[in-house]
Image 1 (cartoon, rainbow, N blue to C red):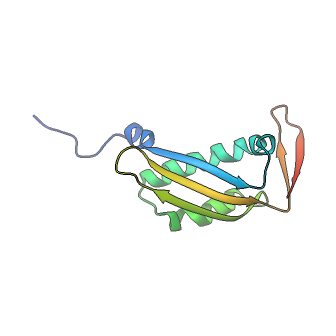
Image 2 (image 1 turned 90 degrees about the vertical axis):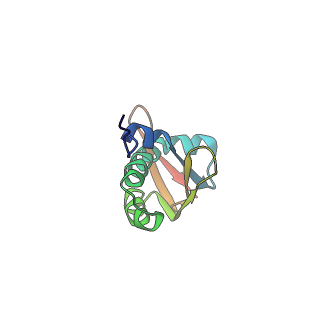
Length: 110
């Protein structure tokens, strides 16, 4: 009987949780950044699967968030049980625009 030594990619992705915490936003304003959060989540899941560290991910996340977020920091939390959690903590840039579901741009100011 043989066993796989590496978990499947689906299994790895399920064991990673990502959260974007943007300081100083209302819930509504934070929802406007959902497309950026999804893009960042996808990047972190893929980068973690490839073995990149938080330090390796930070420059790419800063580039993804360019003009929208500032003071970006990523933290990795690995509890004894449960998924590894990556928390990306940032502040909104002094003036940010986000697209709503219908494509309209909305300005978000700090």
